[in-house]
Amino acid sequence: MIKAAIFDIDNTMYSFLDCDKVASKKIADYIEDNFAIKPEVSLEVIESLKAQQKARIGHDIGAIHSRVIRFQMFLEKMNLPICPHTAILTRMYWDCMLEQMKLEEGMEDFIKDLKGKGVKIGVCTDMTALIQYDKIEKLGLSQYIDFLVSSEESGAEKPKGRMFDLVMKKINEISKEKVYPQECIFIGDSIKKDVKGPSDYGMNGLWYSKYTKDKEIKSRFFKDNDIKIAKYSLNEAMSEINSKLKKVVELNNMGENIIMEIESFK
Ligand SMILES: [Mg+2]
Image (cartoon, rainbow, N blue to C red):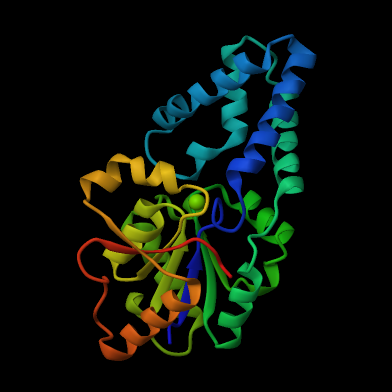
């Protein structure tokens, strides 16, 4: 039996894509009401600032996703007052996001079932930490979570080993006996960050493809790594991983670049 399950949050526990659309519209309306800038203009500028924000910060850490920094950069670029609008826009965006979020069907039962079997439940997320805690609470999962690693905390993003080192350190601090990466399962929507990265590290990766399938399959990473997909139901995937564990503990990948895909937590 696996000893720890580590979950991605965005587009894994809920649809980031759907909620972001609504929250972005809300801030675009605020900008239009206050500064008479058309939503299509403001949203395009904000989107274009993503790359600049990343370049300014200089390396991939949680702050590259910070909406405080992004909205501030937007106001600066448009020559608009940063105070109090940076804080207003940031809170408005996240409040709207939290309001929209719905937990993926089947996920709570899945986590409950794992927990009942003594599996530690963790979260590993490329984001600033506070909002991720708010999301977990809003999704009703707080009671199940044993540990969380954010890229704000680790100083690196998935799939950097530094991130997964911290995951393993935390698992081992809360477990009675030594836990190896091979005894852990990592579940998320990004093949690079949540599946291939963890499985190269030695864990078992499981791809939740519901929201990002097209984008992932068209990605450069997918082609460059010559990745093949094997589709499973959640139960099949879990029993395959658990039976593999029984056979050879030190075995990590399913073999070559075949990744296990699930489309539902039911
Ligand atoms: Mg994600």
